[in-house]
Amino acid sequence: MTAFLYVAGLVLLASLALGLVRLYQGPSAGDRMMVAQLFGTSGVALLVLLAAAMQEPAALDAALVLALLAAVTGLALVRSAIDLGDDH
Image (cartoon, rainbow, N blue to C red; front, side, top):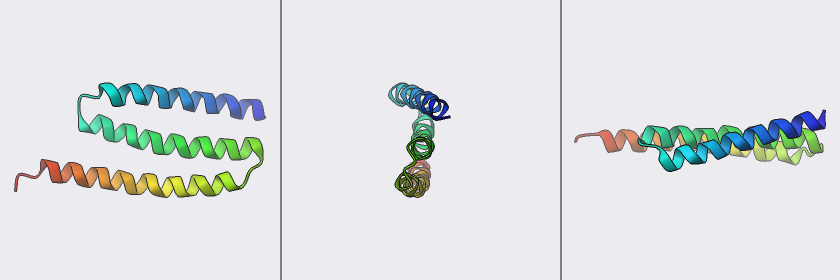
């Protein structure tokens, strides 16, 4: 079972690597916002997988904190995009 969890972690790391490519090449701010959300959700998923594979409950606490920070970051990015698009 732990081998499956480590393989799933590698798939998530590959997803993050592709996100970095999109972050670098992203033509719009929307692409970059989506990459930031990808980093948040993939980071939480990686921490949960590692917590399960290594039997480390503290990693679940870190995953919860990262999930809260990712949600706040997403709201801040949307707010800044709305402020930048405002013509007032």
